[in-house]
Length: 107
Image (tube, rainbow, N blue to C red):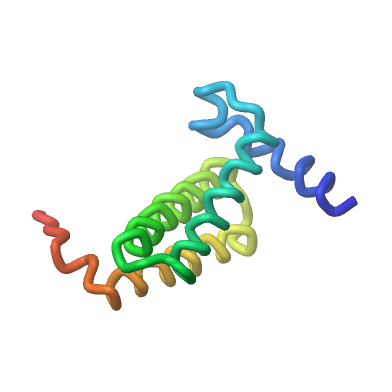
């Protein structure tokens, strides 16, 4: 029952790119993102250094996309906070791994 409620709630995100632009099935997109997240966590737990860094960067993109989606549909801050915390944790992991040392930002 909870799964169906989650799918119904996810329908409001169907109007946000990339789901809307690519005309993706929202349920498929939700499943795909979940599988990618679980795969990344598996690489973080059991992978070697290079795949773990790649998985962390993928999670960074997913968390940034989640924040964008929540803002695009005008979700409440309470709904957005988990994605913000996830982004902060992913950035902390990248920093701790030294993966941000090579990133150059010019202002």
